[in-house]
Image (cartoon, rainbow, N blue to C red):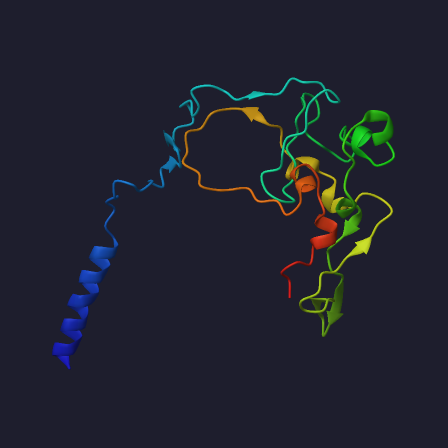
Length: 196
């Protein structure tokens, strides 16, 4: 019995010692660096970028649409955003041009139908606990007469495009089932795709 405990102890020490090595392979990224930026994350004074990104200074209404990164990806903001942020309940400049009733005059892209839909399931109280009131495998959706509060802060998903060059190997290929989806969205029609 003592012999088994002794052998088990030696094996445990060996495993703990080999798992605890802090050596990195040549291709590894240390937890003290920020991915491709070779900088110490513990140093607040170090300049992480050699050059700050230059964002578009094109005024709204004069910029060209940027193709989406993938089908139904949130579109990038192609125009200047100086003074647009932060978005608050009292300040959302985006709505002054992108609300459906404003686009005829502004020429902007309309906020899609998915932003006027509440996809959050309701809660019900069962035995003193809250449970989701939705059927498994079904997408809950309720059409709203106003912009969904979950979609109010545009910059959660939409970001301005910067002119930067990052030399990172990328094999991603964009595929669009419809040519119109390069600059448009049908998310409200395919929201339940793959749910079942």
